[in-house]
Length: 355
Image (tube, rainbow, N blue to C red):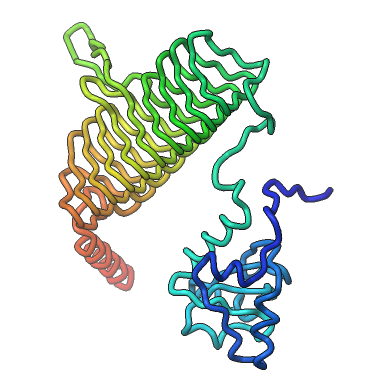
């Protein structure tokens, strides 16, 4: 069985071009003077991890755990820091940078631009005959709608946006330009900015969990707000974002949300935040700009997490987190205190075992 190349190379790129795109310096201090020119004219046709690389590939080294893999690297070139030059085999060109991972990201995006956002699953253009688009919906030129998608009355979709198969776009939903809405996504009561990526299975705009307990049972509270997603946001597969109850749920510009995240009603997330998989944010929380939530972290309702704060994985946040603070544990507390407590418990456990 032949391997499928799902992301074709845009075109082979000379190493000098890769160095320019990534802001790297080609170094060949270990060889003759002519080696630098020969390496600069070499072509890159792929990317690979250190231990799978072969001639024509590009890779990077950024972690001492992979020192052995670096010594066995067979790639044409490798991004690395100045202090690691001596570890690189002489057959591999060194691309010296301050941040190898960032450089690798820039180079990979240059070589494989189609991988930056999902494309039409049917590699088609225009509106598929198998899609259902209400006559009152307004689609700008260049919108792609895959088979099975449903677009409701009064919806507006900007140029260059892709609507995946079986996606459901509700009445009056507005989606900006150059967005990618994945297969089986449902969007209701939502306003979406430009260059937003929503991966398959995500649900935006459904009811928040709003109920008032009474003697006769739970009384449902109407959820009359919206979901507002600002520009350049990315939302992972099977993530759910509830619409607001009395105010809007807002996802700030440039924020990245992983798969399987739950965001409750009235939550306001700032700009350029990172929220990792299986995290949950209860209703009416406010997350400041540049904050980060580790995987499986949980935030109780009506709390504020300050600008630049970081919550460690598996933490349970039960009180406000000041700007810039790092917290961990359940209940969450300053990270250094949490780590010292964990170390103390471990020492006590070891002592008990020895007796």
